[in-house]
Structures are given as structure tokens and as C-alpha cells.
Length: 355
Image (cartoon, rainbow, N blue to C red; front, side, top):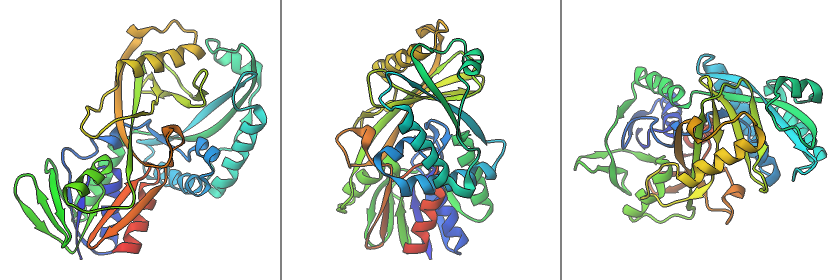
């Protein structure tokens, strides 16, 4: 079949990859540059989603842990394991027993795809290794492993593989609408006819369907996630509770500096996708709560934001599902939601069921 794909983020590229494996003729359209929007503005993690266990998303966590291993094996230059520290304080909202149960479950769900099992760390050794870390009222330290990646370049590596296998990729080609007979109309006025069209446009997927007068059952909750880059070296990851909140945030090594994120702010598709001053200050304050290394606003050397297409599932975006849904309307197939880590599995499921 001739397959048209709308969206050049990681999900679109993975759908294209799986469709090519089945012998389909694939053309992919991207409104701007490949891997330049949501897929390039993540937390740079290949992870199972430890915190998703709190919301009972066991299927998603198991799938994510399996797919994490796939990406880590794909490129040792662009993806690598990272050890995380998870401190528990006497005032933490998640007591030590809950953290311990969650980490045991994380290891069990990973099964043979485990990188390195969690363990309880020696408190004295941890304080010696991280003297700038806030150890007041610290009751326990745990560590576990996940993956870290160069999200944009890992996706671009896949795009190069697709081109070499015959995939036609057309960048800078915004799609204006889709017809039910699998016609793609570009804003330039050009039209392309296919046997089926896959709408994997991420945050723009639902808006494209609305312009095409195609109704859907699933709907998107567009959540901005912002990050700041601090001019301080770091060689391990931290997952920490935001002071006085249930939310957690990450502190991560990033090209010789420190990456701090993320936030969860609802916005419309028409608003600029950029970190607000409030978000920058929020992340800086959260970092300063845990690290007494005299970091101020002047030490922030960069920031970025990505717009995550989550499924509408909860009034609190922190508790919104990270699952994905695939809907078919005639010859149009649309992906709602999805995580970077599970993009290959999403592509595999879509192609096996709908193509």
C-alpha cells in the first residue's frame, strides 16, 4: 500500500520504520524540520516512568522498560544508562516503604530488560559524594537505573535509516487538511493521494482533524514541559519531590552542565511554546531547595520547552495518563498521546493492526 504519514517527530518516524518493514511505500510530511518540536524538547530520558506506578499504569511501565533497552542498544553514542538517586526525607510525601515497594516493582516489571537493580545507599557515603546536597532530615537514599539520550539526534539517525530504505521525507510542508479518501492537502496547494494516511502530528493531530471535519472520540490535553540548564557539572541523576507538592522533577547531567525539569502547564496549540519566567523561577527554586551551591538566576545558561500531547484524563496534568490511543476514521488513522520511549512499540502496534 501507499502510506502517507503526517508528522516527523519520533512517533511518525517509528510508524514509517515499521511500515517499511512490511513492504509499504511510505511518504512522510513534516510541517517544519524533522525532530524539531516535542520530540527534541523532552527531558532526554529513556525511562519506564517510575512515577507512573502511582497511577496504576503498569502496562505502560512494563512496555516502556522493554523499549528503553531497545533504544539503549541502538546507539551507545546517543543513549546510555544513567544512575539516579532518590532521597527520602522525614517530611517526604512518599515514605521510605512506599519508595522501596515502587522500586521493587520497577525491577520486577523490567524483568530481563533490567539495567541495574535498585539499592539502598549508605547515607554517609552519599553525603560525602554530594556535600552540596541538602541532607537535613534525610532518612534514606535509594538508587536505580534508567536511560539518558540525545533525543533529537537519535531520531535523526532513524530518519537517515528510513531514507536509505526508500522512505520519501518531505520537510517544511505543513498539511492543511485530510480527506476521508486518504488525500493529503498541503498549505502550498499540492495534493497527494494514498491508500491510507497516518496522522501522527503530536500536539497538532487533533487540530488537523478539526480542520478536516473529522470527529474523534479521543481528545488531547496539551501540556507544556519546560526545562532550565544550569552552569554546574553533574554526573548522576536525581528524582526529587517539588517542595510542598506531590509532583517530582529531575536534575540531570547535560553536556557538562545540569538540566532541571520539568513543568506541567496547560496551553493552547496557538500559544508560543516557550518557557515562561514563572516556570524558570519555579524550577530554579526547586533546585535551590536541594542544592546549596550558590546557584542564582545568572547561572541559568539556557532553557527550552516542549508541548506534550497527553490524553484528556484528569484535571491535574500531573496525574494525566501517558498512554496512547489509536483511532481510525475511514482511511485516516490518528495517534493520540504517546511517549518518546515507547515510540517503536506504538509504530509496531499501529502497523500490525491497521495496515
